[in-house]
Length: 554
Image (tube, rainbow, N blue to C red):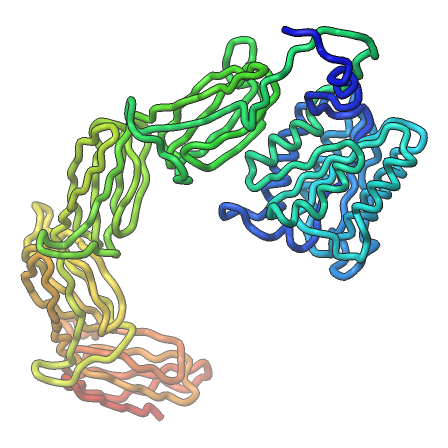
């Protein structure tokens, strides 16, 4: 404590030491096309929507707040400026709702937008503040510095604060004069955290109360760049997770019970970062890779920096799925299901993830081949593990006869079944597909490849080892019967041989005038039926393996 000098007292009267929001404020928001630019993988308009939405929750009830937007309706117009929400108390939701609908597309007439905002606030008659949030420089041939001088000379008590969102230091100098010329402040916001701090200082803080012009005792405030320094580690005393973006932070105001209250007021993706918030009690919720959650309560005090720290008590895990231990690379066809605690998820190919210290269950699958395993994770350590899923591959082929013509058809059905039957005489199925020239993943061991086409079916036993790939060919022992029956309503293919009762088995029935089918070798009868009183007609047909037989019923 010390008695201020007269000079210091005058400065304190003219320039408040803590930046505060005015009672009547209009936020001028840049919605030009450049707001689609990205910061840390997210568009600037998305960050602005989210940040403004959270900061608006802390606006004092008595503050009359409005919103003016430019560049949101017309790509090439310098007059695309709109006062969408006039300054009024309780307007926060209306402002947030409108910002969520903005589609950036136009130019940057920031100078005229600030002028119109000042006029809407009747700056020549009443106290007024404009907060400009821009990610670009003036593009409509206007001079923001000249406007600052004009507003300062005509205004009763007028202030402009400028937030340069994503601007370089050199670019910031070209718009900072708007703030400096009206007694305001320029904020450099290079990421979401800094944008929160800038808006919290200009929009969300309580109204300023100017000091009386008399000798008072003052305390020189401690000037902090940031008053909250967040950090995270994988183990107690371990190194900081630093700049990695696998950590999501959500900052909440703390309720009376110390638990998070309401919606989060800030969001950040980084292992460690710095920000500034108004004095009060808070809770930081940190989530690592969407799977491990920790909380850290903290308090913001004037002149002090809070240091919330979370220890995730976790390690980093790399699982490489392979068909054999000798494979040098992961099999991208493998699915790896991992689980720890109440969390589980599936990776394809190499699995890289953070896991809580303890046991992590693993289940790997390649087609019908499966295996289960587990690894033990220690906090702060990296675990690398090969998950061997014994599996082979067969290439499906079929022929019409032994040593004969190959079947080239997408209609052939292939299925892998077990070589042995269960007690009910059934075989276990291990995967299926259609079409010759396709492939099937298969477990290791002895199996049968079954192929079906039309009315023929064949089987070929095979054995396969882990990592092995082989051709398996099935002999269908069939031929093709092609039938034409002009004017027919129905075509039937019957066995030529009659049973003991004198009946012929109907093998195929179709309602068409022509039909082609694959059949086992043998003798058949083709019968054509008609809707008219015309009697059915029959023709004999002999089918030979790997040959085509054509029959016309007339």
